[in-house]
Length: 423
Ligand SMILES: Cc1cc2nc3c(=O)[nH]c(=O)nc-3n(C[C@H](O)[C@H](O)[C@H](O)COP(=O)(O)OP(=O)(O)OC[C@H]3O[C@@H](n4cnc5c(N)ncnc54)[C@H](O)[C@@H]3O)c2cc1C
Image (cartoon, rainbow, N blue to C red; front, side, top):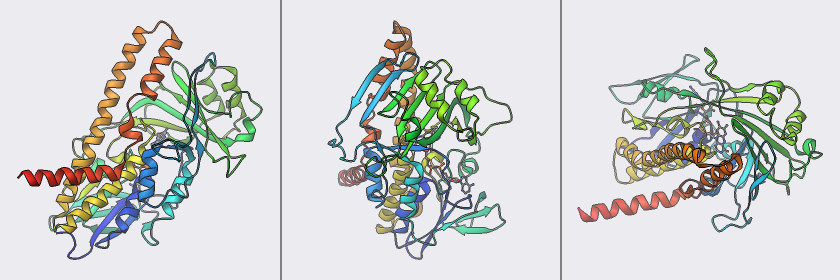
């Protein structure tokens, strides 16, 4: 039963998921929470991060939204990368009904700082790389770290990202594969691009056949008029280099990045040329099949990228990870209040989050099939792009970007109560 003595919780990983979970769980008086992060200090390798209504909902619940500022995505252009032709302009009003803060692109470090500020002092231990877990017969889980230290806890939260060690230990047959889709990312001062036509005045996607380039502000103009600007070059068919399985946040040369856009419009190439040598970072996309279960041993739970290795497919993975942590807190709280056990809490988590991730995998499957059909039916590249943009960027994804996680929890409670009533 949860609650007789303090239940000890080890969160593995200090990304958005681990930090969000640390905030939510630390508010529960019957838990003793420690977060173990392998890095020696807070580190964030990526460039910008998109945050939509679903992100504001969870950040509000975690009390972390105030510190998160970024560039508005209310004016977004979609272009043919070869000709520069604008195929679609979305001008969403700043004060949308869903959330007045709208969709933004923020520096990743901004999100990380906002979350870190909300984690109580003493909860995070750095330089702690988890290497093994053992399911103890007498109860609890034994954790071993690379530095030779050990700890035994009641509950382990695997928030250790897409290459999760916790997942590998729990589900050794689950394998990741290289998707061929690699992102090269950089942040540069917006002023360094200002002399180029049509680059800095809107968020923009320049779509090619084997990749695209994305431009976006990552700072709030009212706060910082000459802030940073993100350039991401995506390449869809990178060869897998044997023996080199992980390229995550590693430096990429200017030549390597430029070769991916060599046939693009001159404006894109000029923008790429502005980036000082040594600034680009490369992120190879890995993904894995859906896990049938995201909990194990009745005392380990996977959250965020560890639980659904989708390789950033929806550009909302940080939000999913934080939502997971908050739902886990609600499930533990509910089980504690009703004197239920830890496995019951994990079952609630499983019932709420597994179907959500199943829906995402299904969406991606169907999208993959649709794109093939669209390709066959389109007369030319512009027609194909227009259909693809319409289908994928503006298709029915409200279940993601407008997800209201507090409502999800309330609806679960209502459904549970009505089930009980029927019984
Ligand atoms: C190119 C790209 C673009 C993306 N764009 C967006 C976007 O715009 N918006 C968005 O919301 N999401 C985006 N995502 C997805 C998002 O980055 C992830 O979904 C999110 O970071 C997942 O958070 P997490 O906490 O689960 O894992 P992570 O952020 O990966 O954090 C895992 C943490 O665990 C630590 N760790 C790992 N192993 C161990 C260990 N053994 N012991 C201790 N610590 C360990 C790591 O050091 C790290 O700090 C994108 C992803 C990619 C690849």
